[in-house]
Amino acid sequence: SGTAFCIIPDKEKREKYLGALRNAKLDEAPIPTIEATIAAYRKDTAWLESLKRYIEGNIALVEQFFAENDLGIKPLRPEASFLVWLDCRALGLPQDELMDTFRNQAKIIPSNGASYGAGGEGFVRLNIGCPASVLTDALSRIRKAFRK
Image 1: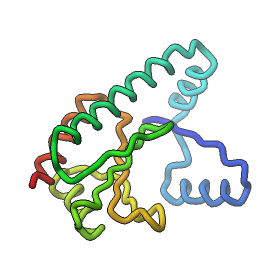
Image 2: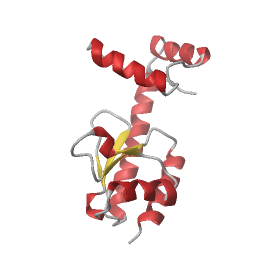
Image 3: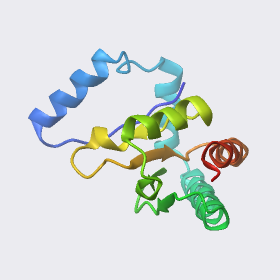
């Protein structure tokens, strides 16, 4: 089990976010995980530079994959995250069909771009914060599901 955190200065937004976490049963991390997270920030932070390099490598892997495979999907380089938006509008698929193809054919569950508001239709958000081998496997399944 992993941890994540965010800082939300606006009290109303913070309470809404925390409520959503509680409803999804994602508001209580195991104590060893919390202790490991605290130690990671209090101790040597060389791990962070290593992690940034690894994630940058995964971003490059995604960019190279879509450049080499004409699937009608264009990745958008994240500015400060391990979440890559995939622009799938060129496919011309309705959002529900797009999500169905990712879930049921590629066996991947990206975030639905439409859930982020106006302008999100035709997009999905792919988490690339994983081992490169897992990402490579996922990309291979995307190629198979969306091959023209």
